[in-house]
Length: 578
Ligand code: FES
Image (cartoon, rainbow, N blue to C red; front, side):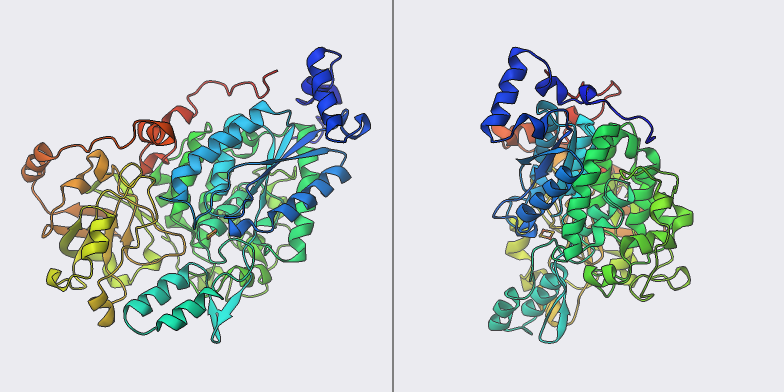
């Protein structure tokens, strides 16, 4: 990562497309001129690909067309040649069955776009949940110099004098409506206020978590992930990212040089200190699978046990991302845990993480807590194992009612999500807060796409009694904006024959977060007998993306990437085909 080694213009990847005096390069140059550019504008300059995940249905990225222009401004300023390339926008709200089903699709598209076009460096425009990990997965596989431009959180907003948190408060007010305490008109009024500007969800949900992790791992400009999407500083950051992209092109700084084992440890440490989304576990595992870095679920538990939660952000805390920015943002938080970080890790700004944190200050000790006043001293995420999850599962203890973290109760089993929706409010089930709600067929293959169903709904009649949390177990994920005693990512999943498929209503379930265990109190002989009777479901897809997905998707503890896209120990393919 030394600044001393600088490529010559004829060493750029793009030179192979645009430089030589041959027939193909003639074609390439003539088509640049067809677009209205003269030779002086592109000859000998790094080509910067701006991978824009904008579309009309990804409202979190509504500002991305303007930001792409600002990135171009920075690229021109630094002597590069910008080219904007639209890639699939993964809209968390609109994509069905779930945007996660298409994360690997965008990762593949990113990898191949970077490989096939004459790109010397890329700006990855990510924000809404799955976009950031998908772009990074693709960039890691192509190993073309890349920098992330985080989309930024949406504006703070309020309703009837109460601050609102996108995502998190949807769940809260939906529960209130279920309990009969919110009218239909009020619910409709809430629609006007819950997402009041461009930008990703302003809680510490998956989007905020993943952009913060990209910064902690050295893949953004310092401070970039905390800037609100509509703040003028976001435009300035976009232009600065464009300038930085030109520099990483000249220095040929590859993602594999930045996303080292140290960077992954820094990312996991930031995840814990932020009280971030459980989804980050799946995404970091997938990113590690694209690199030479070995990562397992136990690494997350190990780092969780040594890292305090300092960010007082919803859904586990009180504030939203706008408050976090005003309090000093991610740099202030990382500075408070600098002893837990690999400060010597490099960044796309050609300085160490430690150097990028110099001068970071916190301006509000309630938003970013001090070490002696942490939200919780450690253990924001816990990895559990047991006979119900031999390959592991996760829970976010800080987001649960604490008495439920050690719990024994009878299971009530729903065979899939439609079954859950149809029967959860049926009073004849006679559920109490002691029951454990179990959902099957909600995992990577079963749903498919491991949707965010993990915050399973509570029965309406228990909501009316004031119950707000119960132990819930599934092989699905949970939105980073959700909360509750929800055991997630049970692996292997039920659809693939994991023990979750064998649970029956009435079985006693034992959860012990402190002991890191999740067990079903059924004899081995009985489980073996049930396994004998279990019939694997028929494959759902005979063609298309679904077939590829079904054949290649790994389980949650492996990151749910496609098997054939894992780094297999061989050298990465050459970045340019020409
Ligand atoms: Fe885009 Fe929440 S819906 S980040």
